[in-house]
Amino acid sequence: MPSPVQQIADLIRRSDHFLVASHANPDGDAIGSTIALGYILSALGKDFCLYNPTGLPHQFDWLPLPAPIHTTLSGAEGNWIFVLDCGTASRVGDELHKVMGTRPIANVDHHLGNPNFGQFNWVDDSYAAVAAMIADLADELGVPLTGHLAEAIYLGIVTDTGFFTFDNTDPRIMELAARLIRLGLKPGAINAKIRNQWTVSRFRLWGESFATTEMFFGGQVAVAYVTQAMMERTGTDSADCEEIVNFLRRLRGTRAAAILREQADGAYKFSLRSTGADNVQAVAALFDGGGHRNAAGGTIADELTSAKKRLVKALGEALQLV
Image (cartoon, rainbow, N blue to C red; front, side, top):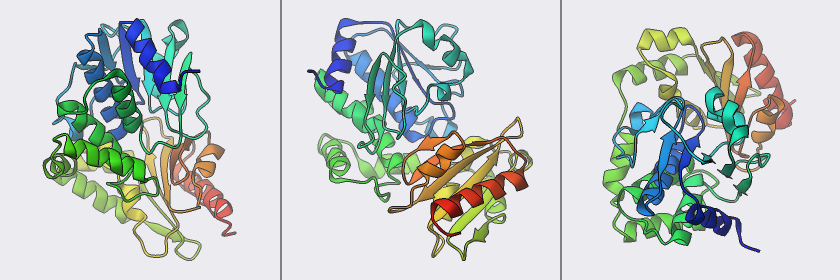
């Protein structure tokens, strides 16, 4: 019986015309995986389109692309749809989600609870990042992990491991990073490109958000928020909210951290972080969200005070603080 990576590789060898997509508001792993798969398909002479409903976040616009990233399906066609880094099919956005039933799907993901929504499913939560799965796919297809492909893989693995500081950092991911460096990747230069992309506007937003921080259960849970008004006032957007929750986790004695971000429809998207055995994925699942044991998220359709109260209560119960 072929392994999942062998099945996906065989699919690519015998097929053509692919649409490669990841979740909306993509993080480094989603974008890195998308771009990396694009470079693999390009190296094999395959026809493909890259798609994301919210496009390429400005903090990643330094990364060379193998093809433009479409924000609508007009002109973005494919006989097969690759869906990367999506714990649920709906995370690809409304437009693509509506047509997913009309074309076969290859679902490549590492999130807990992925329902295997594709015709081909390679779902393995032992991987620290989907980009690491794409690296294994490149190996299976004989595409060398060098150049811009290596940069895209590296972007995915360092952002999903917190630059090798999260609990998902394991020997396999460190060995992949070492291999990329042996093959020519320059970590100093690429890390500077990834990390040194901030604007003064982002600094101002973070200052406002940090000022909202509240501590619960004797300092074991930290919660902050970002409203639409705060983003409008500072000239920022949702991409500028990335990583705030990781800094909240640095507060001494904090077991879990949460950031609530107001969306245009008034609902609040939340991100959760923890370490060790504290499982925030179980909390996200209570609100139809998902993720990993120590990094998860979801959405609460409620006003801020109530949404915060519900989330804090769920965190307290999950961590057995109440």
